[in-house]
Image (cartoon, rainbow, N blue to C red; front, side, top):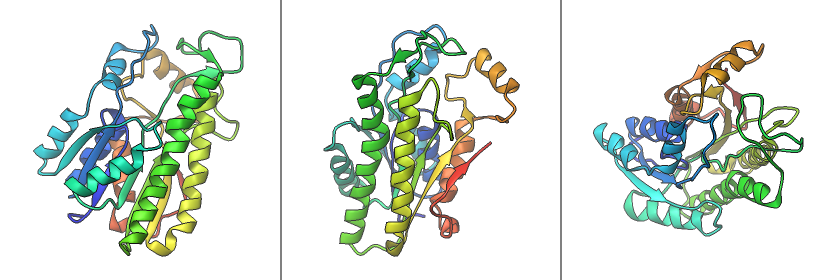
Length: 266
């Protein structure tokens, strides 16, 4: 995959960082897009998780270079509609035309309809407001849609015949109680990605969504592990690297026949 260039959003920590490194190991050049998020202190959320979200992607680029790859850190606000074009321009100028897009970034926060101040694991909740809706849908729905559109337009303009789109989702058939805007925005992203799988198939682009298991990106506490152990459906607490390997596979030549799927990992 030495001729491919990827953009991975939310690549400064967790699944995004692990995916950027996994793609680099396969020979891809990678733009590590990220945004520093300041989280208010929450006793139920480890400080290490907040530190990761507030950090940059330079360490990830260093890991990419350590495995012999080419990487570029790009701080970019995905809630700004101008950002997709900026990221694609940067990639083309520095690394090459983008043909792999991993929509990993999230504007995650926990909002709810019920009058409660904390979820079952003690994390702070807030009511659904225009601000919570805008934060979630700006990053988790609008940005992936615009990133896919940017990829499609540039792909068609250069008559390319190979491309990969992978998004990450969460929630379930009954939405995402206690994280309602997050779940709704991810559902919108799923719909955009499934539409892309159909519309962009003639261009040689596949599009899939990954629904990871609970993944320890630094936020998993003993209380979370106890809740998972008591749940009859949840099976594993995954590492970011385990999820990244699946994403990297979907971005490979071997996954040419896999498109239009929401793939649940357990």
